[in-house]
Length: 461
Image 1 (tube, helix red, strand yellow):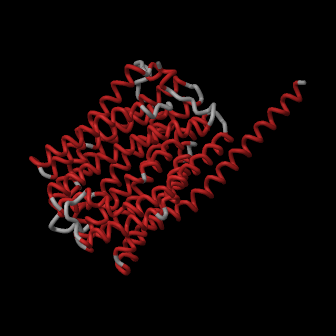
Image 2 (cartoon, rainbow, N blue to C red):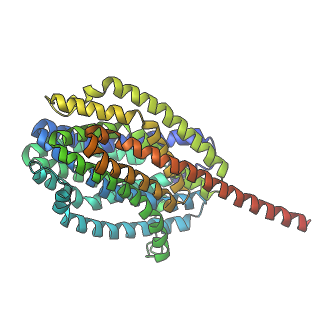
Image 3 (cartoon, rainbow, N blue to C red):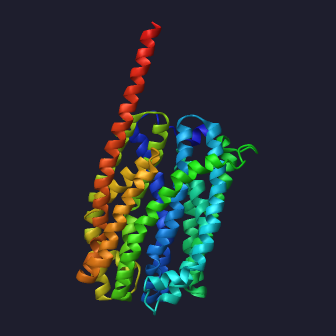
């Protein structure tokens, strides 16, 4: 059973592996966005524009904290992918076990700290007074669900590290449907709290299903008592890779926090506009997230096997797919973007319609640069260079912070619309140069080793 579920990306057609891994992963990301989009649509239609703005005002903090947890789990999965690619299954199981211990520790700390600081954070963001109470209710419940988020992302990350990108999607499909049903029921009785609890409950179910399936179907992942022993050396390696991947989300989000604070000052209608546009945009950006996840696993397995040429070939295919989709997304949003806004509100105001359409137009024009950010950054991280890749997040943070603190006060909402494209372009410049330097270094090392082997062979003869 294990052999059928795992996928060895170190052999065979890179394009087929990338496409075969990406498509199921994409479905998973799409339905993960449905969690968030279902909340927004149902809240907007049942509770109105202020409640929609309340959810939108929490987006940057939600991305910063939940994103850190997701990145952390993705980083924990990289050593597992590398050991799987190297066929060192004993070491792989040790990393699996210690990733569980590390997740438990991080979940307890992160949940405790940010649940207690939730209201202070919203006040710091200058959340409008007419929406701050609902924003607190929604965000605090999501913070309580952090352990559930980490459980699902760690379980699905482990399966993806072994090349199985399909199974986590099946369970996510089930829980996404459940989330929508619970949203409709619970929002009517509990208000905005019902939407948050529906998300947490649905993720809990998908995480538990992933764990049960892994235990029954993946013989290669069945852990013995020796495997489950806490090993600080393994934890150190996991943390070394995981924290930078988590921080890349958080560092990027710091700029988004500054930007969100600037938009909050413009008023709740502008908050609702940017929130609605971001929900639509994030849904259309799921293929870029799927390409990034694919590149990380592909890079991890092939660097473990020492196959540099396959890494370069895989990068070319990822970029090609990203470019084609970027053009398609721009055309679709240009034609139908404004119509999608009607999903969120029965009678959106003229200002909200204009602002949302403007945001979507400005962002979709630069989608290819976002594709490059995800592909190259995650490929570098999959190869084991997490500390270097995190610097790309610094460029994104600086760009968004500059837009929020300088450009938005001077130029208004249009500056907020162009903040993310500016961040993507700056990050790409750094990432492309970094990737070329890393590959040159690795190829030089490979040539040196091959030269030494040739000398030894000649001496033996």
